[in-house]
Length: 123
Image 1 (tube, rainbow, N blue to C red):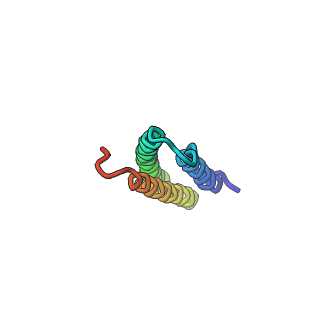
Image 2 (tube, rainbow, N blue to C red; image 1 turned 90 degrees about the vertical axis):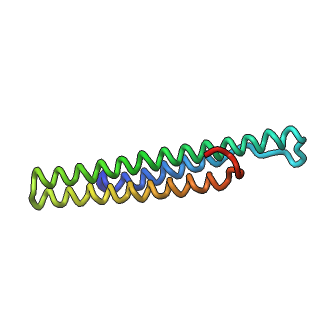
Image 3 (cartoon, one colour; image 1 turned 60 degrees about the vertical axis):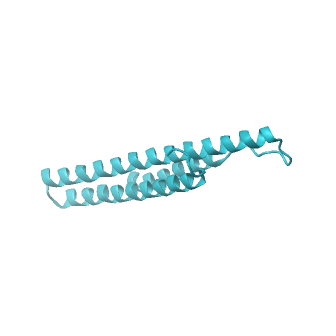
């Protein structure tokens, strides 16, 4: 498998690990006290806000990486036209497409976390 073939798999695995890490938390006891309920709710709100900001930043960075790859591909094609270059440029554009797809996934995760935040919470 080539380096470009491994990258999307690695990227998806990393995103899956981050998703798992940001969504796991401590379970509340069966009969929580009033203080535990308030603390748990506040903690859940903070985790949802943290996840939302994390995924928004992740999406922004992935979109930026994709745009950079697209510009790089255009520049390489402009500087060195040819069959070999065309193949390389297609791989770069494919990577940019995969990065945009990962960014869309991150955008969706940010919206999902935002939905978990109670109405009136500052976004």
